[in-house]
Amino acid sequence: MSQTFWKDIKQPWAGHSRRDLFRQGGLLAAMQALGGSVRRVVAAPLIIGADMYRSIGVRPIINARGTFTIITGSETLPEVKRAMDQASRSFVNMDELMDGVGARLAELSGAEWGIVTAGCCAAITHFTSSCIAGGNPERMQRLPTLAGLKNEAILPAYSHNVYDHAIRMLGVKLVIVHDKAELEAAFNERTALVYILGGPGDDGPLGTRVVAEVARRKNVPVLVDAAAEILTLKPNVHLDRGASAVAYSGGKCIRGPQAAGLLLGDKSLLQGAWINSAPHHAFGRSLKAGKEEIMGMLAAVEMWVKRDHKAEWAQWEAWLDHIATSVKRVDGVTTNVRQPSADLSNRTPELRIEWDGAKLGITGQEVAKIVLDTDPRIVVAGARGARPANMASSVSIVPYQMMPGEEKVVADRLYALLANPPKMENPPSPPSGPPAALAGQWELHLDFVHGSASHILMLEQDGAKLMGTHQGEFASGELTGTVATNTVRFRSSLPTDGTRVFFEFSGAAEGGRMSGTVELGEYGQARWTAEKHQYRTSAERRG
Image 1 (tube, one colour):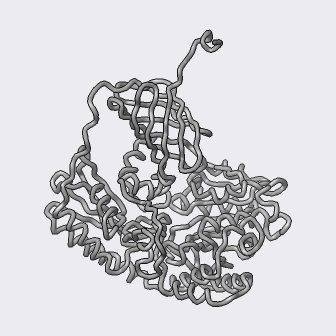
Image 2 (cartoon, rainbow, N blue to C red; image 1 turned 180 degrees about the vertical axis):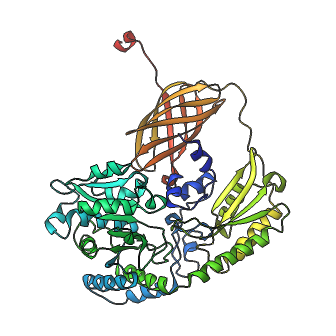
Image 3 (cartoon, one colour; image 1 turned 120 degrees about the vertical axis):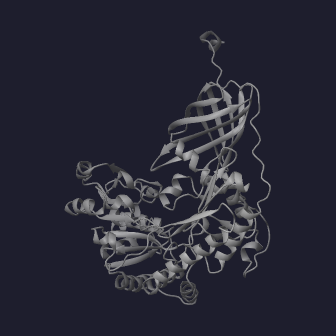
């Protein structure tokens, strides 16, 4: 397996893209990897007001990371808040509401039509339902039973990712293509749609222009997932390349409601998507967007057209300059600002602050952990440097979703930590003594937050080094790790649809048994035990 992953998971916030985040197992995993406190169970009454979250034991954070769902995306614009509040004060017919919103979204965007959904993934699901069932109630009621209906979606290989679960949840088979010849051959009478993940590959050999030209000849719609992108309007870049529709997250850079999404494109397909969603009794009924989200999302698009994006960018750069000026007062600290690439997702400048951890007495990961664990809490966008072997340190700051005044808090906290760091100790040395003998087959038992599973470990050993295979319920993957006396650490990953499931085991070995905890990235933590398989002769098996 990739050693880069295991290096990067301990550097939890490096990079900006959605793809980077799900490859690294999510921000929650990163917090846990640094030992951050991410869950706190309390029983206290809710107090509505400025300290609402704290009243139930939840500590808010300053978001110096960007637009990620695990830290609630973005802060809604004031106009969006007012629209949602006002929308809650009247009753309307939902079909009439979406007709009015659809027409206005078309006027604002230049697309044929638009609808509001319960997030970008909901938009993908509703669009898929529309491609399969259209507005035919008899077909709609059969979903996700696809017998006799179109049941395949074509994806360029670069687009196969964890988010295409929004298509697979309808029982649709994904057909992954790697070149133009495979693309041409993939279309048949069962093809419902083509799905493309917006990003660098979107303008490549199997980008939207190429795929849409083939799909148009086959009369198959094309959907682009542009969740974290900025809006491009009149024309929309993806629709201009030939896509039938494009889906956005409402609660990211557009700064609409967190539980909202936007679908723009072909009017007939989008009206079909709406009919397949709530309030209608169809597969998408559970993916409900309320009147508050719908009007809040419309207000966010209205404001996107009116916002002074150049002034916002200048404000972000000014905040980064303030932070840089503050931390550079510490001898040995340097900074640089990285400008974004041509990718439309999470377009923002980023400040990187660098220093020698050995000289200052604190590493980047230690800084990230301290500002996360203490008040005021700050989530940074990158952290590198770990004692004792890697003391070259840095933290990164993304101003994309910071609020006015927070730049001063970030600047003051980072300066204080770098100028006068707390005494940090090197991690304890591994226990001395010969490593436990672990080679062989082990029966692994996992106890999750709910439920359990039985897996198989096939371990090979070269002194303190472990390697081998982790056999899960549905797939197997490579395993690497170490053993120091009886302390065991190893990592593995299992392939699954569009992503991998990652495991990081730690524990102790004693005799023919091992036990400990395993980190599961965004899926939390589990307990594990393993017992060594005892081989018996045929005579012993006969008793």
